Image 1 (spheres, one colour):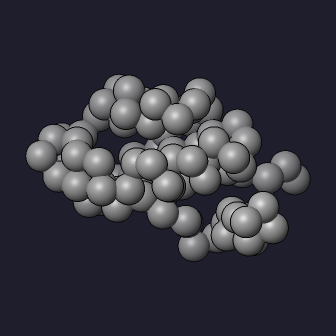
Image 2 (tube, helix red, strand yellow):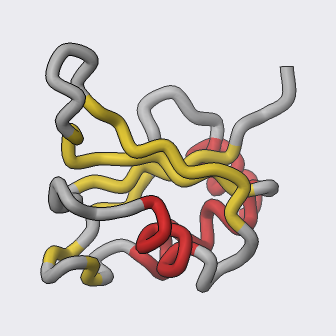
Image 3 (tube, one colour):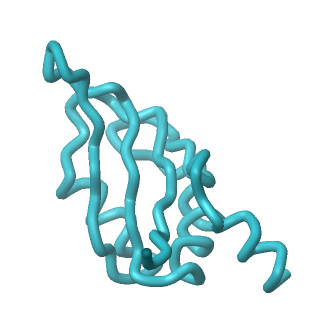
Length: 94
């Protein structure tokens, strides 16, 4: 299975759209996919998303440059997903 290069994006307002995230996260490079998570029963957004990039360097750049950037008057929390090899890649490249 190929590696996925996702970054975690938290502190989203419930009305944040995929288009808003794509615009902001394309700043560091091409975005492959965006997943805004919603509650299965209610369909309401959970307030976080995952932004997937085509390579690790771009994903790491997003973590470095987009953490604490504002979208809809909220500072985003951008970091490593729980199930990710990005931390190890970051250690290897320094």
